[in-house]
Structure formats: C-alpha cells, structure tokens
Length: 169
Image (cartoon, rainbow, N blue to C red):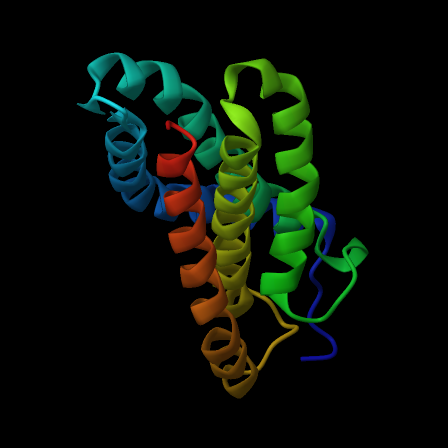
C-alpha cells in the first residue's frame, strides 16, 4: 500500500462517485429540511417552507460539496488523521463562507447555528464515507472511526434540527 499513488487527479476522479452516492439521501434530506422549515408559530406555514427552506437547502448543498468534493481533493492538506474530523474542518470553513454570504436570509442566531451544525454534520459524514476509497485507512480503522463519530454526527443532526425549528419562533 505504500507504493500506491493517490494524486490530486486520482482524488478528484473519485468525487463524482461520492456526490452521486449522496444525491438520493440528499433528496430525502432536502424534503425533510423543507418540511422542518414550515414549522413555526402558526404550527405549519407553506410560506415558511419556501422562505426558510431555501437557506437550509443551500446549507445541505454546502455540506455535500464540502464533504464529497473539497475534503477528498484537499485530503493531504487538511490536518488530523480521521476523515470525519477533516470533514468537520472543511465543512466549518465552507459553512462560514455560506453563512457570511446568506446571513440576512437566516432568522436569528439559533437559525445560523442550526445551519452551521447541519452543514458541518453533512460534510463530516460524507468525508467519513470517503475512508474506504483511499490507501490511507485500514478496515479496523474505518470501523473505529465510524463507532466514534456516527453518534457525534447524529447528535449534530438532532441539535441542528431542534435549533432550526426553534429559530422559527
């Protein structure tokens, strides 16, 4: 394995596969994001689905691009060994850029935190999926990382969902 190359071009070639694999779950998440965006003071609002759903949808896209494109391409340049942490770092950078560009459309601090956590969680999960496609990891290392970070990612998803609903009130 030490003689296997894993150049920038080879890492970049894998990204369409990762993005394509993320599309079906992303469509389900997008539907859930729009539904969660409709909850508010009047129980459910179709205006909220559209107005609040758009920034949440773009936070999902930001997480996908960060975790399935930027993290694999920049893999050797992102510090830390665990791919989930690499995804957290790249997701945080991309989420901050997204939030700076779309801050006026996001309701309050809880909404900003919700979208930040959501985007970072998606990025971390997708970056962790990349572990099996590299010569840098072993099967036991992948299992250990998954046991360690999937609960963190689920907590991030639950917290971001709660904050997103709370931000409507």
